[in-house]
Image (tube, rainbow, N blue to C red):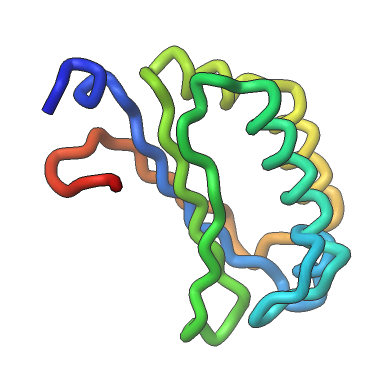
Amino acid sequence: MSSTETSKVELIAVVTIKPDKVERVLKYPSYHISAEVKALTTTFIDFVKAQEPDTLNFYMVEEVDATEPRFIMVESYKDQASMEAHSASSNLKTLFATFEEEKVFMSAPQQYVGKKVAGFTR
């Protein structure tokens, strides 16, 4: 692996959303959720893509066999400082404050931070 690869930071976040709040998080239909919930998340993802050039990957995967709406955020950052800048952004804080206020989560999101040790990207 190159030194650029070894400085990258990977973050996986698992979020479980209340079924009646899914439309509020995403703006397109999904396995479990409605359009209203998706709007917030999609708008935030668009912001990250436009404003955070050192965020290399940022996408959401829906667990299709889950009994409740569970989503996995997959994030890659150029380095630790890039991940910290993302985490400190006012937009992220506003998004999570809104989720808390609206009681979107069934349980607290779980985050796992690490570095790639094996595998490939095409």
